[in-house]
Every structure is written in structure tokens, then in C-alpha cells.
Picture 1 (cartoon, rainbow, N blue to C red):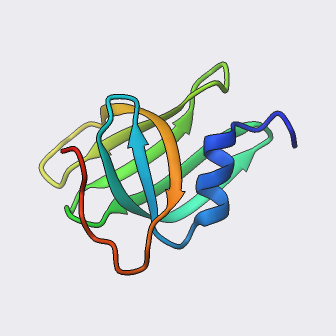
Picture 2: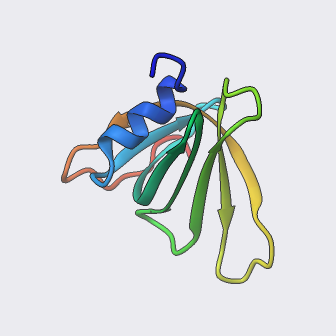
Length: 101
């Protein structure tokens, strides 16, 4: 399993506990994943951010080099790209803040 994306592996290993995702633009927030799965090397996850009511989806890029984050709010008809996940870390159990937004 050495060829799995390391950020995706970290998200998968931390879930279902809260995970802090830091995006390439420096913003970060805490997410709770409802499901995480690998299909061979491809990664998919679905969850929510702890401070809004939108749905979030994570997928690896076609070349498996990046984990991409998408968002769909209750009023949205389509998914929108939020950004590329640069880092995933276990969130503290009492941590609820959003940094950098």
C-alpha cells in the first residue's frame, strides 16, 4: 500500500474522529467524515465541516498526487471545488474553531 496518497491515508486512518484539513491556500477547518474508502489507489470520502451545514466530498486526482475537496450546500444544485488538501491532522476532541477562513 505504499502507493496510496499519504494525505488520503491520514484522513482514512483518523476517521471517524474529527480531522483538521489544511488546504493549499493555508485555510483550515475541522471535518467529520461519514465514510472513507479506497478503490485500489483511488480515495473517496464524504462528510461535513463542523461549523456549517454543507456536505463535503474528497477525492484523489486522476494521477493520485492530490486530494481534492468539494462542497455542496443545501441551496446548491451542484458541487463546487473548494481546493486541494495539503495536510490532514487529528483534531483535538474539544477543538471547534476554524483557522484561516
